[in-house]
Length: 165
Image (cartoon, rainbow, N blue to C red; front, side, top):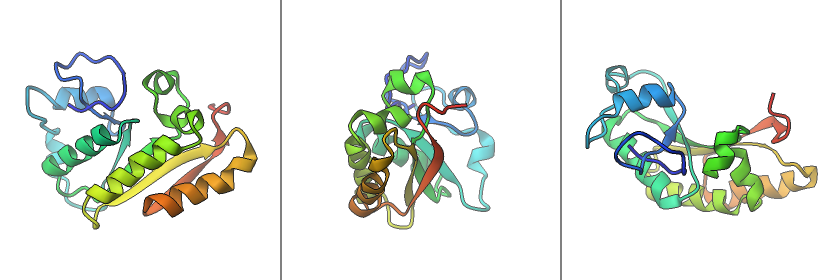
């Protein structure tokens, strides 16, 4: 239902979010009509932490996607912004590792800050990033992401954008 990327979709509403689990195609099959309906197995999920991974570059659209997921799946305990995807679709959609490298994380910080400021405190906000192409940028990048956005945690993938295998 909600898209924060420019990825072409067959849905009638172009404002859907890229959610990676269980799969985009499976999620699209579960999200039909004018209302978002999560697959039945998601609706009954009630044990353990459930963190939904989102991808996007527009703070308002990413927040809208997170709020829609929360509305339909109140058991979600957190949202993770994917800033580590090295695939071509992420470059085309301006998200993932390409978003982080495009402006050294400024847009990512805006998205994360917007999520943290507008989601309930009991819902965690996190990000996954890759090592920067320039290793000297890692410490300042972590400081900006953790120190300036209010996120709850950060995961760093041990490879950079060019090491995508």
